[in-house]
Amino acid sequence: MMEGRVAVVGGSMGGLAAAAALAPVVDEVVVIERASDTAGSVAPQGMLPHVMCAAGSVVLEKLFPGFSQTLLDQGAATGGDDPARLPVYWHAAGIVRRHLALIEPGFPRALCGRRLIEPELRRRVEALPNVTALRGVAATVDLDGDRLRGVHLKDGRLVDADLVIDATGRGGSFRHALRLPEPPATEVVIELRYVGFVVERRADDDEIGQLAVIQNTPSLPRIGVLLPLDRTRWHIALGGYFGGGAPTDPRGAMDFAATLADPLLVRFLGRPFLEEPRRYTFRSSLRRHWERSSTPGFVATGDAVASFNPIYGQGMSSALLQAQALADEVGRRGIVPGIERRVAKRLAAVVNDPWTVAVGGDLLYPQAVGRRPAGHRWVSGYIERVMRASAANEVVNAAWTDVQQLLASPGSLFRPGVMRHVLA
Image 1: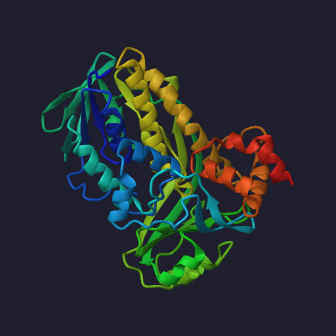
Image 2: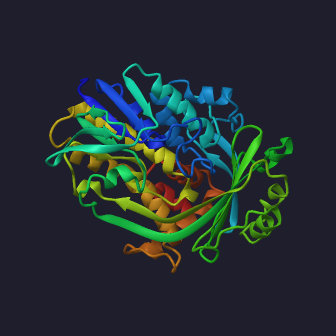
Image 3: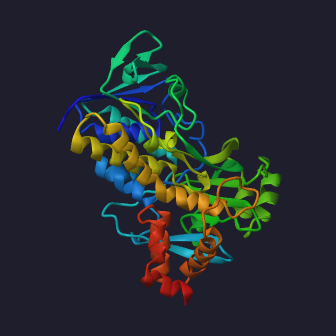
């Protein structure tokens, strides 16, 4: 049932995803973004390496059929000819997995960075007939008692809304304007520092696969990844936990890569840098429990709900899955009293899986600050066995890949059919 007007504050991935998903189920969506230049990504980390999980690609294709093909037309890499098998070089737990066993999605696979994905999503969203985009304007709330009635723009305009979506990110200034108590939060501090490099992609690089991951280990809190920015360029990320970031100069970057569990990335970092390296610091994985506290007329989404350690590549896909759940709830019930708490519970369920994956790995380090759940060490030991088994066993490979790609819950790894292969 079409009903009501929604104001989405924030025009990055989370806000665009929410607007796209809500447009078919409400009368009007207004997207408010304070940045006037939206040619690329408006997120502070938008120009650093990103990856879209399979689950996120499925949501994008559902929202906008043909989205993946458009990315391919704009230069995205295909990821090979076999839709159910992605060649990779994934070094983890002392062993190398050479492919990911994927489901066949029913549309072409497109591998690329956020620089292609976010602008194309913005173009598609702003072309929807019931979406209005306001750029270059900051916003504060229009609060009537304890209920949000809309959004005040700094230029004096008022956007009336039946529901306000906060997609301004982890530390959005808009949310602070509410002057309401923050919900309870869970935090795992890791002080990750990473650097992004762009280098040429060459024809003979295909021998290593369509991407590479040199994963951190329990004794070495450093990671390196090689991701396709497009068909002609690689995006490399080097990251170190607890303040141990990589240098940005070529010699220093190669020396850092040589200390990883596998020195594969050294050869790529020896190529000329096509852009200035970019740094980013990620202090902690942070989850706000909006399901335990609600404000009438207000819903948070994206990084305002949960921001994860970026090395797991779950952020964009989590935002898309949250947007889908948000629209499902609004479409089923309409914008009715109590919808905020119901949506918050749905979004909490969505972020459970990526949160479990991210903090489960990070809490292995004694230096990580955060509460460790009961049985954490036993579960971590089992997951290490899963990673090793995934390199040789197709059943485990498929199960582990589904979890990594947000297509299945981590609990699926404990099914008897998977455990039998892991323990063997």
